[in-house]
Amino acid sequence: MFRFLIILSLIVYVFYKIGKFFFRAGAAAQELKDFKQQRRTPPQAKKSKLNGGDYVDYEEVK
Image (tube, rainbow, N blue to C red):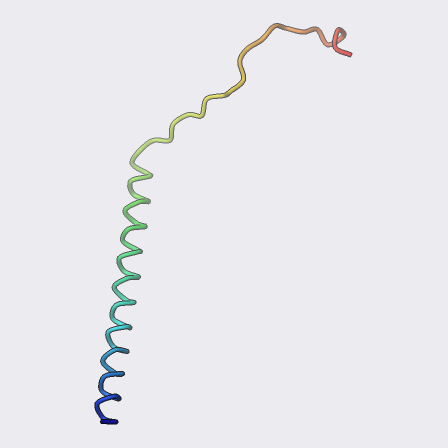
């Protein structure tokens, strides 16, 4: 029985390590894909929320 628990724990540990490796590889691939897509699309110019107004002489402002 003790041998069965040791073997089972080793199998779970190995699957855990392998799964962790594939998860990191998948996350890195997704990040690289996002980075490439971001570089492919040109950044859009930000529009200013300020509108042009009337000219106010400096001396009139108090």
